[in-house]
Length: 307
Ligand SMILES: [Zn+2]
Image (cartoon, rainbow, N blue to C red):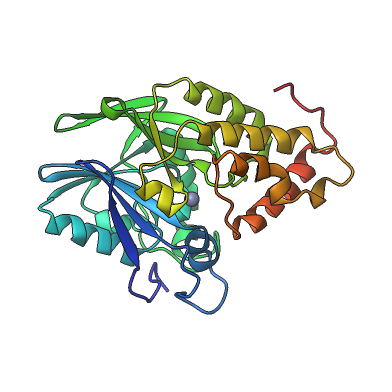
């Protein structure tokens, strides 16, 4: 399989504002692209994924190219049918579920943080032959051609987008702030019901960057992995940032506890769900268990940071 998932994409399109669309796929366990384990079905689609498009006139900025060639092609055709002819890609971070549709936008500029470009370049061959995360392989991934270190501004018609580096979830994170409507496109810096931890050595920095982000003028938040009903219904408030800080801080604070690995998803997000800040979703139980394991391995014998 070369970036092909062999099935017709099942994508829902939500109109969030007159210039902002969400394309949502996944959380649909009845449909798989392959019978055996693969990251497309068993990670990306299981958790559900949104890709966001900012459009004005015949131009669009595509914030991530989806988790497969088919999904990206479906999205591009949909946008072309709206009269859009010029596309610019912005990457939220280098992970495969966000860049897999790159080839569909092979004629477009790709904007990303320098760290995203630096992460893709040495992994390009392993991504393309399906050995980095296992199958499916992804054909012709490019290294982004417009790179920035900390901040970058894009304009499309009357809309200004502020791209900002965030070390949350992954060190190369790029979120998009749309000051006009105080909208934050959060990439994978925020997930509902809990953040997917990988670079656990950076958790104290994640909390610092989350706190800084919370001080920005933000009215509505749209994460890439979230509850489709909340996304379609107007997005999240800053309480999703509060929930993420609470979760990460508790995961760190308890990491020296004897029975740490037995901590359930409910133990950590139950009180946040009761406030309506997050919406527990069964497949995140495995993500939480994996988070516990990674945090335990890294932090059990280290002095815990003051956070
Ligand atoms: Zn992701």
